[in-house]
Length: 347
Image (cartoon, rainbow, N blue to C red; front, side, top):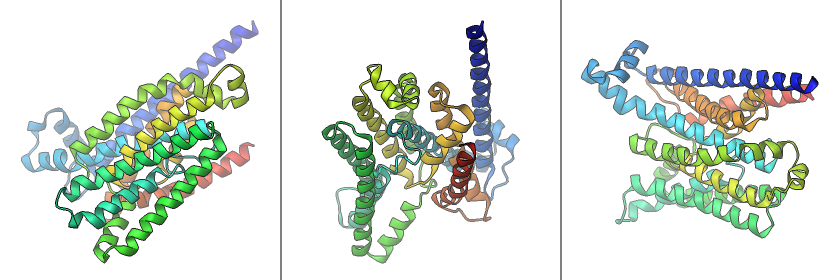
């Protein structure tokens, strides 16, 4: 009788959290519409919805603004935010560290170093253009950082503490090498490096959106494949190992996924802080530890956070666009402090 009651309670809890997940999807749609409305052109929500359904119904001016200017920026905010949120929940779970994120592993710092190389040296290189080589080098160095972490994880047997410390070392190394390039570069190059490292969605177009989205859609099924295992890890690593789980091998697989997601997320839009850290924490508060809901919930939270930050970047100062990385940091710090205080009160 007690087992039947427990099963009914669990099913009720699961469906209640599933409805919360649907609410998060609705918040995603609302944030997207807000982002599309933001800007000097007076585009109303009914015009946007009608234009998305039937583009020919819009005037040419509004159609160009919607499809060539606003929609690529708004959609890549969703893709990048979802990729960072997904990478964040996997990093925090597999490393069993609430402060872990893709940037804890140094991936963003190495991406910034690759972008800095393109900014400083591409003007003297005749074999490639700046717009092509900058994201390519950012992606290559971000993936290189992920490869170094994988090799180190293999050499150390996948020890969690060692991976975290090595990631922090790579983070400081990447920042130091970027600072060295700023010291060597011209004033114009330094300005471009700083602008790239604070994060900016406005330079991304449809091609960049398709690439990031394709990466996200390719990795997401593999993340969902491991939801039961990741939930088991949250119950205790010792228990997971006693049940036959090869934790070092799984840790390497997850780090590979995280490296790919973070590398493609940041190579086009620059360094965006806190999304991969805050999104999973909010999702965990709302959805619990069941990774069947937590994995898509973290992706949704990351997408909503970055989409809302994209809206604020255009709406706060009329006629100007604030780099979105600045806003995610300004929003992320107080939210993170609230989460820490809330966790302390619960304990």
